[in-house]
Amino acid sequence: MTVIRKDFARVTTANAHNSVLGSQYQRSVADYWNAERNPVNLRLGEVDGLYHHHYGIGHVDWSVLEGPEETREQRLVAELHRLETQQAETLVGHLGALGPGDRVMDAGSGRGGSSFLANLRHGCQVDGVSISEEQVAFANEQARQRGVADQVRFHFRNMLDTGFETGAYSAIWNNESTMYVELSLLFAEHARLLRRGGRYVCITGCYNDAYGLPSRAISQINAHYICDIHSRSTYFKELVANRLVPCSVIDMTAATIPYWELRAQSHLATGIEQAFLDAYQNGSFQYLLIAADRV
Image (cartoon, rainbow, N blue to C red; front, side, top):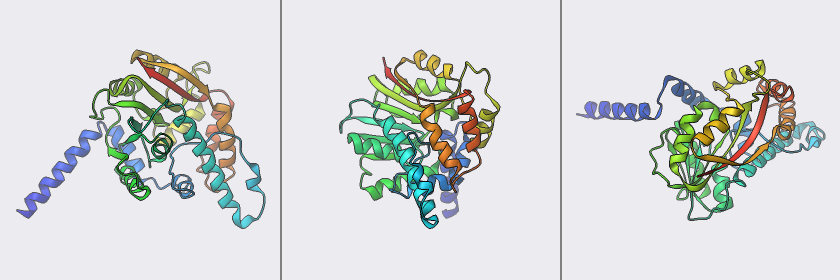
């Protein structure tokens, strides 16, 4: 009987896993993030316990490259983390007027950094969604340690088909996670989940239609992260098609270049930095914040 119960548990777990990961591609992405232990994510999060999985914006304090060599790495880590937190705070600042009675969603929540910032700023209830079981477990443990597990919860679910209630959310965001999914499917689910007048915000890299087809540097980025960067026009076409009307668009390309220049000189460089710099500087790649209202 014990063997039967164990076998049943394995089958049940496998079925739940397959219901979340809808394709072989999604399984490969989940495998990547389940195994990911990149110091550029983990070391930066250790600064203050906010673990982000995105890039930074703003002016760099280049003095971190000066001073005693024995503390140079520490200064670089702190500055890179400051820039990525500034990016997340910019996103959270565009979510609109929220309060403790509002429920919001972090779609593609990673290890939870943006979710915790939203809760800190607005006091709202947050659901984070990720197809990485490792990220979900890590983020839920962070919520427990921060004493907000009753307000910020992370779920092993697919952001294309969350299973949450229709119209339950006042705001939803994607922070550099839209390149892993088809936008038509993603925005249809977001439109279903958002109440009328609810706010959607994304920060994303997209390829510039005016440049032409994706550049070589963008192809390198896609290969590095197992993703598929969308065109700028696709975002706006699919947003409007799903009743998400842009109310604010900010080109943050110039604001993110200093982050990449600093990261390229750091001990945390992963080898993809020059591809980002090439793509941003030759005009083939743009870094946008898009805020839209559900109508």
